[in-house]
Picture 1: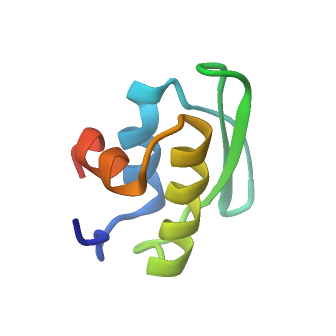
Picture 2 (picture 1 turned 90 degrees about the vertical axis):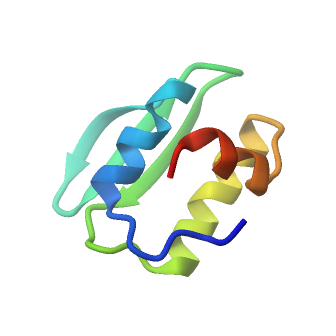
Length: 80
């Protein structure tokens, strides 16, 4: 599956909610999201429009590793 090219930081946060991620704090243009599902995990998402493809890939890779998934299976489950 191809990486989305026009995803904003806010849209990514909404897409990650089913995995238990919620915004725990924000400083400037960066949001920190946290989940307690499958153990505690934090990720920082820039509030940019759109997210750069490399940044998005890095975030999704970290989330997928935490939940023991591949990036493709994560993308399929997220409704992006």
